[in-house]
Amino acid sequence: MTGTELKDDDAMLTLDSFLCFAVYSANHALTRIYKPLLEELDLTYPQYLVMVLLWEKDDQTVGSLGERLFLESSTLTPMLKRLEAAGYIARVRDKTDERQVRVQLTDMGKALRRKAVDVPRGLTEATKLGADDLERLRAEVSSLRDTLLK
Amino acid sequence: MTGTELKDDDAMLTLDSFLCFAVYSANHALTRIYKPLLEELDLTYPQYLVMVLLWEKDDQTVGSLGERLFLESSTLTPMLKRLEAAGYIARVRDKTDERQVRVQLTDMGKALRRKAVDVPRGLTEATKLGADDLERLRAEVSSLRDTLLK
DNA sequence: TTCGAATATATCGCGCACGATCTAATCGTT
DNA sequence: AACGATTAGATCGTGCGCGATATATTCGAA
Image 1 (cartoon, each protein chain N blue to C red):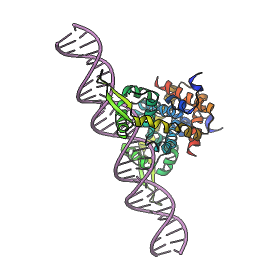
Image 2 (cartoon, protein in one colour):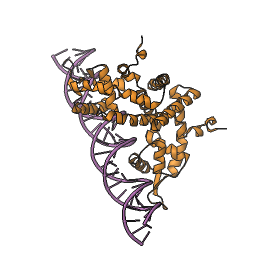
Image 3 (cartoon, rainbow over the protein chains, first blue to last red):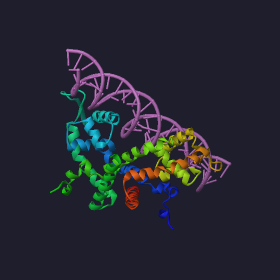
Image 4 (tube, rainbow over the protein chains, first blue to last red):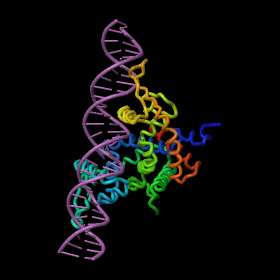
């Protein structure tokens, strides 16, 4: 009888049995892989995700970025200020609705994209997974997230 | 031609194509699911992981906990102090090697385990996955982590 | 045995991340 | 027009999480 056959409550209370721990530690591992790749761009990993969204579509509100990233304004506001200080974005109050802040790429921010296109390849290589396996895993994990948030 | 068939560098630079973002956001989602379950235990999610390790095996050093959790002493020391303040653990210098700190469950910490056995079931239900799918996904994500850390 | 290297933990500064709360702007109803 | 309710961001306090560094202990080689 192996450990994985023990399915009562007590046996489930072991670290290795936790999907959550797998995801938690995989996230740390990914962050560590990204760090050296992003240092050349002078971006942290969450900052990079914001930039990716802006390269997809420029001139977005704080709220719409937060909705895509599942982040609150209390997280985004300070982070966006750092990106602004770095010169990659501008934060501009919307003239027709002054409650909103529009986040816009600067020329420097737009130019950064050329350096950033190499980053995903570096990560893909580190996973040692084929494109199909990688995409399947991505879809499963995304689907898990969506189920949990529902 | 669908989006997923675009495999050149530019097309890879979209948020939805990132395995890393899937893991990052799934981790956030899991943390949110855990929060209400753990509030009754007066534990945060990382604190809960430490307690799980100690319930598996009491009297571990800071270093061995960190090795299992992939965390540094700079993260663990303050966290363990909070667990000590909460009354769940004791931090004791090892008499034979004073460099080491042994982390031990208090009676309160041991008693907490009885409440904690219900937590994994709550999470499993939230995933809406069968035991087999869940275990397969856990194994795949763990394996990804191990590949990345190698 | 003594002194330099290695080891274990702690401390510090910074950047996420969240919940609670605040402020300012806009919307809706009267 | 006016005012209560809603909305969008910002601020604050707390807790991870890391890299760099500090301190104390132990180990090892001369």
